Length: 449
Image 1 (cartoon, rainbow, N blue to C red):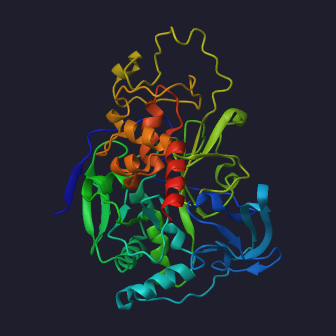
Image 2: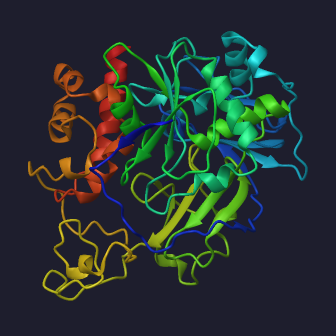
Image 3: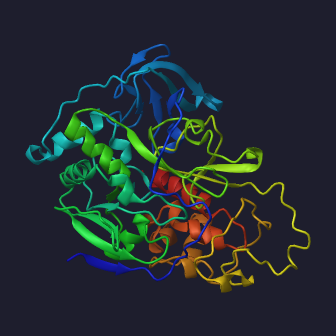
């Protein structure tokens, strides 16, 4: 019998543009890239050279401070560019793919017969260690640490989020192998959160059934309810889709970074799942699937709450398996918008009468902020959607003041920016809360290390 936790605080935003559980045709990506900015806590050092021929699994980049953490090519082909920005900051390492992918052979391995160091080495050599993130700081985990526990949330609850039951279908063996490999990396437990009614079935791990609105699927929320982090402790987290890729490494012996990405949003003409490879261009996913007047849309790699605004020539986020397309809103002008009844407009506080139509009503929400930045209002609006045993307003103020003692006492070690995404959505002060948390975590990491 699985343990059950019930999340009461939160908010489900019912957006128009849900995807069906169907496979769509995807376009061909003309290039693939490793983008260092997608990985927090690393200092990139490029080891591949422009013009070099690589295989899928060949090392392109390492972490300068922890060279055992490798970033590998997701495809075989030629390294065509190492793009740099100011102060020679590495922006991306680009590979032009071959017609047929050739893989580095890492050898099939039976996880049950391997010890911790062997599992860790296999994951590092194949460039899959960056999939493993740690709390505190929400950064790529250090291989030198021994985590207290490892957490995997095997479902998604954000607006228009993919259905993990559909993603894992046919890949159950790889998912189980991935969990078995993670279990070798800790002396504690591997906790797997599943949605009530899910068809996901796993063994050898601690299964926790989670009920409630978003952010029920956030791994930080599950950690807080299952076994909170104390100062000095380290826990690791892995996205469920990345667990499949890790399991595939041991079962097939190759670094196969293929994944399903869901195409969603009110401004799409086709909604479903595209099979692609990590690091592909956004254009290869959305071309032909966006409404004709696509100049006034926003493409997001990820979900609308915590995703990243991208263009078609950008690359899929390293941890993302969702593309969302919504109206930009720059062509929308509401005459006396503040005074109109607001039929059809979404409101958390029930300011508009649309909430009377029930929870099944779908909303089209654009990217406008609809207000100016101002002082933080202590009105408990964050608490209504923040289901962790933490006082969000006080923690945010401690981060802004960079008061380390208060940050520690108020739970900084447990959180990640995504945990504040709903707070940012309901915030009447229009403050970029996720950015504040990210900057606070980065500064704290530098201070403590």
